Structures are given as structure tokens and as C-alpha cells.
Length: 256
Image (tube, rainbow, N blue to C red; front, side, top):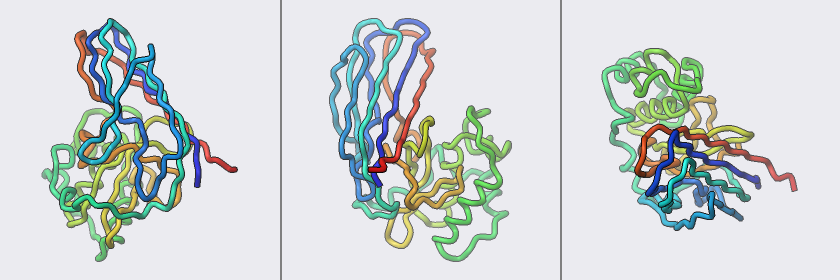
């Protein structure tokens, strides 16, 4: 399946800032399930940018804006070809078994896990847990607070919360799992989901939507052990910290 994509990144500051070093993850990942056919990135004021990759092979765009400014804007558009969401790569799967700060095996998660009667096989466990989170938790736009304890207490959260809890539960059952940031079909903000390693392949799971991803148009931007390793933006600057981050993506199926 071929799709056209575009998305806009806008970071707006309350007051002008300067000496702004930034790093963006906006260019889609290239692997066995998605091939980037064409893309174009533009930044406001014609800011020059450079490209590299991080330790997970995520595509990085970085640059510097020295003069005072109240916004950093970036737009990317292009075409990508998607294949069924089952693939293998060269990364050591053991990297995605230990817990992390955002995917902890804390008492609240352990208690929730003890209440579950899981199927026997890894594949069925992953399917069961994905459906369970979809049925028992409610998605919201803004979190009450960060952390899985709050997510479990209120039974509601953003897509990051769904993904982090599923990752913790999968890892507790010996299933390597990693966090994915990207975009899904339609017009929306960034979305997150999970990749789990089962039967020799990575497979996509979306616990917020209850989907075992196969041929749905999910565009992957980056992956890591948790959200902290695949954020869309990181940076430093001189000025007050108050800012508003807006990201809007669009995916349109190419019927040609």
C-alpha cells in the first residue's frame, strides 16, 4: 500500500528565546515494512539542518537557530510504501526485556498482572493484553499525571500510557517489547504503539485501539525502550521554559 503523508511541527514560546539547539525525529523509519519513496522537509526562516541516526537507527534532523525567535516550525511531506506489519531486524531482542523508568515493574503493575489469567502462548498473551487494555482503559487527550500508577488508578490516559503498560506486562512474561512513535490513518496528532517480538518476528500492537496491526496504515517514525528514547523533539535554548508544542499529521491513501 502506498500512502501520502505530511505533518507539521510547531513549538511556540511565550517569550523570545535564542541559541536554540534542536533535534527532531520527523523522517519515517526505513525497514522491511515501510519504504520511504520521497520526502521533503522545510524549516521556518530557511534554517539549515543536518541529518544522522541514533543508536536505534531512528532518523534525526538537528540544527541551530541563534537569533531571538518565538517559534520553531517544521513541515515534512512525502510518499511511503507500507507492507504487512511482520518483520525481523538485526537488533538484539534482549535489549527490550529489562524494565525502565517509564515501564516499571512497580507494585501497582504487579498487582494488576496478578489479577489476570493469561493464555499459554506468547502470541495469545499479546493479543489478550492488547484487547484487555483497550476494553478496560479510556483514552484521553491530556493526562492527569505521569506514570503507570496514575494510569492504573484512574483507568484512563494518553496513548503513551497504554503503550508503556503493555510493554511492562509483555516484558514481565518474557516477551521483548519496544515503544513506537508515529502516525496513523487520517488527520491526527502523533500516536504511539508497541512492537512485540514473537515467533522470530516483530509484530505491531496498538492497545489504545485494540488492534493487532497487520495492514493498517501505521507510519513508524522511531522506536526505543520507552518514550524517552523516541521523542519527536529535544532541544536546549536560552529563555523561559514555557512553550506550547503542536504536532498534526495527515495520512492519505494513494489509490493510484
